Picture 1 (cartoon, each protein chain N blue to C red):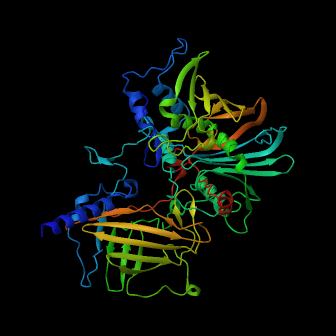
Picture 2 (tube, one colour; picture 1 turned 90 degrees about the vertical axis):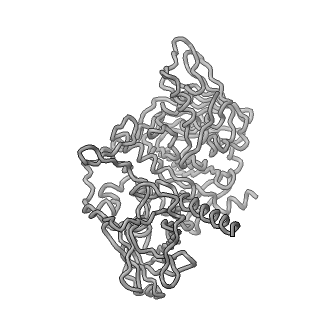
Picture 3 (cartoon, rainbow over the protein chains, first blue to last red; picture 1 turned 180 degrees about the horizontal axis):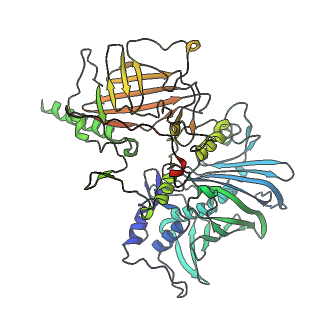
Length: 296
Length: 285
């Protein structure tokens, strides 16, 4: 059956999956017309390959960090409410998967700046950085305020990001169920921590067990993810895929230009991606000591 | 006697495993390391220290082979053998860095590291080695040859550069006398069978890694060089409190002593500044 994702040379590989997939004498693209669901191996290979995450002759997932720049609207989200959409002057986010972390740095049109971070470096922590990215890590350079109430929501943002949702599916291993709906491949899986040989870096905290329904488009890119968590229905729609790196910095990693996330039908973020850097850029999200102390 | 022999074997094998545990990718050019080389007797000088002089080879490399006409042939390990894919895959793959296998820069430096990484090939943030500047320490890695012409110093010979490591007990010059150089000022002392080299007095222009890893003149590099049999293991730790949140330990390198008395090192090719027109893409894999 489904082979687990493997870790090798620091990259989280899908070597065994690929070995199984490629062992089929003629790897057939699943016939959508025939409504025949691909095998788990085929679906996972197509998902990772379709996004350009499998690199080198070994075809292992090497996408371990990325940066995103964009614009759009964003809402204040609490455990129970979704505020009104606020236009963003700029949106910047950086993702790390090797140890799971995400930082978003939003400049609202109102002039307010919000830097929100989640990191699994020393256990799972969420905090806000005041003044500067990396605030609170060194004296005299911004500050950090814990935001553990937002932990699960931020983990959802991480693991429902386009690359993150693929990695979350990998972490679910054999628990991924493949079906066809209206001609589209659908992966249904529980959010779960990765295991030593199975996307080990995936940490989901209290999201564990929440079921993700991931619908792929015709190119095997994530098109729609649906999750129910905390009594709320979270839906993320991804569209208009392409290599969004600079023109002379193309990497063949496909990400959506448009991402819309709703919570119980209310828009949490409507993001138009202007640019990405998918060359595993340098991003660092260690947890400030003050945040660690506050969480203890 | 028998027990002693077995213990000796276990120790030697452990050393061999420790030596070859260095990532192959970090081992440079010249073919694989023979683990059995660690089992050879370690030559020692009159003071009982392991001898480090000689030519050191080994490591991975690009897998160059020689074809029937004598020309070197390199198989590009990119998808479909495409040079563009090779560069893109290399650019992504070589930036895969486990949590501690990279410097942890202070947040003030993050933007510049990211900028350097993207623009390291061009005039906006040129990687010094792309302009034929010395790699410095620790980026130059382990020298291909170590020579000793007097009892005061070892000479580390790299492809195009050299540095002196003073082993006569002298201290570093006082800070007010520092002049700032690419390779800094190095002094070494023995701790058991390990030569510990401290290097300071850098110019701060050298990068310690191609993904934009710049440093400051304040850094200190501690190298630990351990010869076991005919192998050597090199480790380096960079401390730069003005730049790093914590010391950065470089991936260790293992080299093998070249025992062939007839071996001749090839003359290194001259350094040419990188011609951007020859690069298919700008990601510098």
